[in-house]
Image (cartoon, rainbow, N blue to C red; front, side):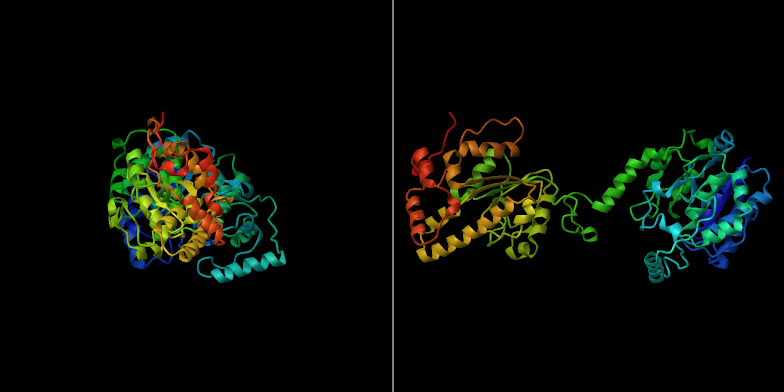
Length: 565
């Protein structure tokens, strides 16, 4: 037998004992290091579980802490014991107590016997590392780290900053070129003996005692000095998230783990009974597999990290509420906003619903409350039409409306009379299709027949609001699909203007529009606009309606629907 295992254990010792027995019964010697902080009762229980196995032993115990030299010291002690007690071992495999074999031991030993001089250890220079999390890659070798990152974080950060300010640098021992890599390796006896028996080991160890996270650099660096042949990869499947924390595998990951064809996986949930029961089954129950290839499942892990970090487009969650402009999509699906159309056309929402064959809302941001399609008081996702509830967070109202109606394009009306809080949000949303006819608010004021001084004040306010909205829609930050006309421009050719808008909403291949919506009777509207001008209020956003009337039939004739000939 050519393979021996070192196990680093600190928790779930019963599971670690199961794995140690699996390897030992296959003929592989196992040396176990148990963290000195483990309670004596738990340690005695583990030794009792393995007492009948003559090729399982326990090494000197160290109190291990993440990121410190203690992990390297414990590994050195276990490795030295392995080499001293088992002269027939040619490869030493370092694993943790949370590791689980994915393939029979015979396959692993056969694989290593075919590569007797190869060391399997991830070992890359600091310049080539892109996966370190925490901002320290080259610096971990340049500075001293006497304080614990977890227990003494304030002192840790302060001492690093002090060394940066004073430009202190450590001298790297001769012949040492810092490398980084996974803690979990499989080294040949020759390489491991050369590392442990090196004449300059005391000086090298003194240097690495003050390196940050030396368990990811000590063997990775020294293997480059002594190895005949290195394959810079680990035979242990270990995946990490965006925070540098290892993924935990559960029972429902069984097929995923098998697909990787790796020999060992880390980190396994201690209560994953199905994984332990299946993967520790007799070897004849498992089919032979191919070359280890963790890259087979990299895409799935990348997708998982993406989902965890960014979430789903348009879905806002308390645990992942985004910073402004850092969200994963403002909304989850396309929607359409018709600004000013209901003032110019009679029953426009009904006509539009019939034309596109779908649901069309009224003014969702009306001051009186959301005008859901069909006059509903509650919409998908328990969204209330109550104005107070909606205006507590208008953006969330809109995003929830779109999210809870996935698969159905949401279409609604808008005007300067509505709540304007979402204007910039919609303008910067690539999912928004915004169509604006400016100045149509004047038609509603004209039809109201109220006191003219009051109408004049309202006209000034509405024009100011609409001008602000148009300024937003013309800014460089706009990502929405925006179309804009003055009222005069639109009534010149309403069919030509409506057709491209509806082409984006209706199903592909739908026939051209055969009928335009009924336009409001504008008889006398020009006189109203002139009176506004005479009173000192210039309705600039309406456009030159008189010019439109000269180029087309009289404006009042626009009350008749246009037909495509």
